[in-house]
Every structure is written in structure tokens, then in C-alpha cells.
Image (cartoon, rainbow, N blue to C red):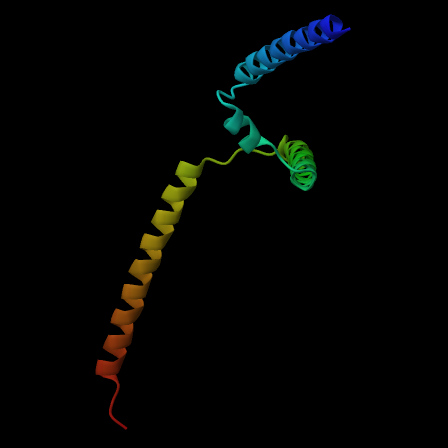
Length: 119
């Protein structure tokens, strides 16, 4: 009986060593060089729940943005694309014209002040 017990202990020791080797190999294959790295990466149930909720909120936001993009593409598909460079040039031209008119208005105002008789 003692021999059987020793044989069982020896078999269990070999199985335990084999399981530890398989575990270490899998842990390394997953990118955890040391046991401490693996334990540091473990998350509590509450942390996992919070991460899942955050992921679900992110996925919902992505779906909303995709929906908005599809809607906006549909709304704008038949609209004429504006030539922004041409519009910028026109804006600059109009600003210069406005400045010239402001200068002319100021000059006319000054001339009127000079030509008005004192009260």
C-alpha cells in the first residue's frame, strides 16, 4: 500500500509539472513573460463589467456616427460641390471693394465737414 501511495504521489507530481509547463507555455504565448505580468493584467469582475459597458457605449456611438454619415451622404449626394478657392477669391475681392468704399465714405465725410458753414 505504501508503494501504491508513493507511485500515486509520483504520478501526481509529474502531472502537476506537466500542467505547470503547459500553463507557462500558454502564458508566454499570450505575451506574459512572467507570472507577475499575468497577475498584473488580471481584471476584477467590476473592472470587466465597466470595460464591457464602455465598449458597448463606444459601439453604439460608432453606429450613430455611421448612421449620420449614411444620412448625410444621402442628403448631399445631388448637391453641387462648391469651388472653395473661387469663393475665397470672391470674398477677398468683396473685402477690398468694401475697404475702398469705406475710404471713399470717409473722404466724402471729411470734405463735407470742411465745406459746411459754422453754426
